[in-house]
Length: 311
Image (cartoon, rainbow, N blue to C red; front, side):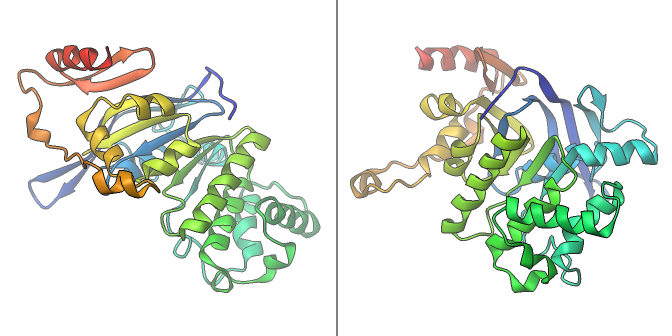
């Protein structure tokens, strides 16, 4: 995976709060700050309900942010934009959705589903070019051009997700948010879809935000990983570093839950349970860099403890 040090996406203090009832506010995303560099895959992991999918949807402006900034190529995503500016932005940033069954219109043929972006952005001049582009995209994602005239119900889950990927690629985006793109698929198909995404990244220079709850798969595809817990990033590091030196107790808990194909290891595996009440409460925790590229949410006192662990 090629990776530059040029920032494509900058997220600064991003918040997404929802009103629940008259007096209750749900802080789905509560002050996220991180960058994504051109050509990299940034993995975002955490348990269900931690706010990772909401983060992806807020970045692409399916939700308007409650507070904070999202800068894409230096431009504020949530700033005031007219229709043509939003159209331009929507072409650069695309999304692959979690559910390959619900994300495709059952009444539209695959040809029209994939070509929808081409039509909206005026990227083809006639029907012949439109058909050729869609057929090329189908072959790019490992399907046949004959599939263009079929409906979604005629495909398996893995094939539908490939159609979703082709749809995202149709407008030649720079950045793709993959929101749990493999969680609804069989394990054997998951690897095929992830390998396809890696291949496309190499060939087209794509940048991904890969959202998932399966840390083992995220490690396989990601350059860097951010671990999320109840709306906040608790740890961020290079993929290998996070696995070798997980410092935050929640990260350790997630890693301890990953099964390995080793009966002896599994028989004696010690699962770590995370207890959020065990943290130092003498001050508000901050996101701090404990070593170059390795960040952790902690207080000053906890930072010293984590430094000792590293030594």
